[in-house]
Amino acid sequence: MAKRSATTPRSEIPTVVFSNWKQPDIEKQFEELPEGTTLAIAPHTASFCNGVYVAVNQMCKVEGKPNKQKQHKIEFTDNETPDELDDLIGEVFKRLGSTKFYDLKISGIQQCDSTVAYIPLMMCLYLTANHNRDTAVSRSSMNLIADEVLQQFGLTIASPLAMVQAMNQGSRERVHVVPQIGSPDVASHDMTSLFEKNEMIFFKTNLHPSTLEESIHPNRSTLRKLGYHYHQHGIVETIEYYSKNNRHRLLWTDLQKECHSALTQCVNRGVPITGFESVQGGILMFVPNPVHLSISNYAELLGNVAVQVAKSCKEKVGEVSFNFLERAGPARLVNNRNVNQDLEGPMRTYNIQWKPVVPKKKGKANS
Image (cartoon, rainbow, N blue to C red; front, side):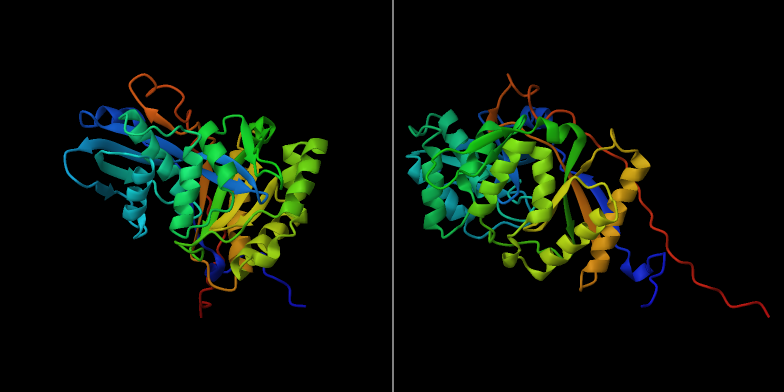
């Protein structure tokens, strides 16, 4: 067997990008709103273990103001938005019983896994109409309307109930778990221990698709085992258990399998990864944060993950990105009373630079 070189060939070294999903300056954004305009925000969600949802600090935001026209005026600030969103927005207002039309400025429509944030968008529309006394629908009834609209437009969300609860209650302290068959209730569990010592990172490569449809649904058998393991050992150990015992891989793409193999090899080599999952659009992983791991080791940890993924993928990886996700509060309407309160907390930004060792080209011997 040929002996692998200790250094990584240049062709296998991807560009590594570190970033935060930074929440914009809500206070400044609120102060700049035109008179009569509201600002509704709803957190996106990240999921792991095939059914555990957490609200994160990437937001869908809707600035809304009633207009005097006979139609909605909709502006999207994101580069890419699905064609059917205008019709979907109109249908939501129709089902809310709205009689007004709005000027809407919408941002944050795409989640970190490249899926569209349909449910956060619909919640922002509800908050806008409710503030303007333009609907008699209760917040709890909005769940049914969202489900009906998704069905009408042929859209599938893997776990809408758990996603909605995470969005409505936030995830400052708890995660939200898909209900078991026969149970109408979403379970919630304390997740303080997980986030006290770990960072939640969404990691993706340039090979992961920029747009995709929901395809992975909860595996009930897995969730039952996870529930048992959680009550016996706690959520940190549950994440470790799931990483090693995931049986939901038959639905994975080749890229997901390659990424899972890469992370498994990292763990087997002793790279300090608490847990990980190859998910739609990337990899969600938990690693010790720099408070519990020196910053130099932290950079090396993520760099090793990047190189191992590049080695494991059949296609060439040109770039990888690590997005640090923070826990978020619930969906709400921002006003001058809460604009400075309970937004998303201080963002922890790490100036991480990682430069892999590249073998130098040998020059010609001097004659």
